[in-house]
Length: 293
Image (cartoon, rainbow, N blue to C red; front, side):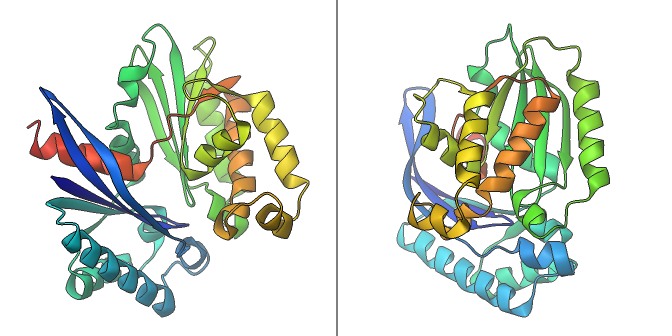
């Protein structure tokens, strides 16, 4: 059995095809194929508040290819979600209709909190120490999702329109940063020794750069050292010398700045990086819907 997950983000569009594995009463999945296309829809959405005809055509071509791949792989069920860029695009609903009619894919534009809830469905909370408190930080191209976990449950949650592509486009508002700062201060001050949980493509890459062992936390000091090292290289050097993909080499700098700023405001000294994202959560959501219901 195979399921498909499509994530239409502000920086890239992803397709994950996963094999569903059942062992007794437990059901999990193994990643079969992961395809990432750097469309960067956020450049249109955050500056012009609409997706341009050229980007819309590229998206439809990508969705058509994804539909054909899912058919070839005999995917039994799928879920396609669009996040921050499509949320802000005035023609988002029109593009959803075009994707359905031309590519044969049902697409849902999800709000920030639902986006975070889908990622939670990867059962991040089940691996938390119930005696500790955590600040969950998911940084995307257009938004940052924050949640405070206490006793294994979400105590507070909020989505802010601050993201890597938005920052590169200078479309992040100072008042939004101040609002996020106040929210963090108000909702984390009573928790002592708060740990972080970081998700998103950039923190996954940063964790690999850190060479920390899986399961070990990434300290704020080490993250800051990586940030300074990356920033000391030009964009071209980050691609040619450090080996970063072109569409990762620019957004990784603002991603570092968001994670470091949030950690500083929340007095978080280290962060766990479970290496899960929206596509993982979508697959788990499909498992919960089809098998565990």
